[in-house]
Image (cartoon, rainbow, N blue to C red; front, side, top):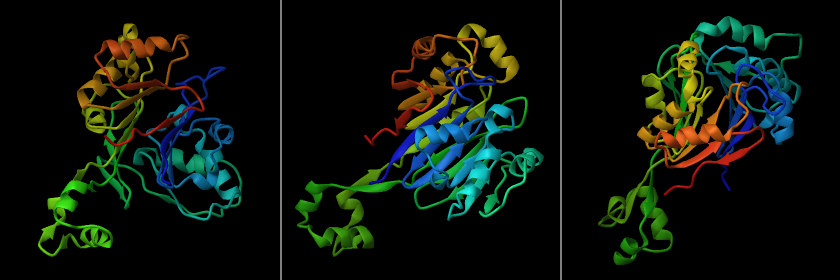
Length: 301
């Protein structure tokens, strides 16, 4: 059975707290694992969450501030220590190549696993697989930063009443699905489009075109809300979003499930982030993330 869920490894911003580790988010998607923004301590958080190095297929870094990337060194060395049997692909801003190199080879270790480096230098598609297309979009932060969006290909949902009307049943249904036609009946006549699921990961950024493009129509949106609305000036100055801004983005984009994360250590009441996102008009499912939480991708409508 395929599993699609977000495993939250850390939810702090620049400074970790007693209850929040630096960033780290694993998206499980049909047998693949995509690790986003492994901050310091991610390897230990993986252990606590029951995530193994063998579960990883891609590493996606939005930008090279420490709370989003210092864990790369430990994660990459653990991948090699455990002799992960498949290739790992790493995506990160091309302008930060020197930082990735330093983290990948931060200390001596035996390199046993291939890590394919696919840096991001512009908006566009990074990978196309049978299960998803992975895209990147530029964000607005003091250092170059990209958000990531995963889109499942559209499929088709068979309609039993139309199949019955044409007398199609049993193995013939499979033939129709594979061939697109059975006699005079086309696949389009007895099915409807099943929209693919969509996931986006938006970290450190001000409001910008990339934020809206990434969020559009998402089933699950993971987005930073470093500040509360009363500190919007600080958010703009440092290149971040507020809870209300994140909620407004999700509302306008038609997001089904909004996950707020990357919280400043200055705040002690997480419920206020939800209140402000709701006040901005977001009415869908909403999660104020906490460490080691698991958030399922919503089932298709």
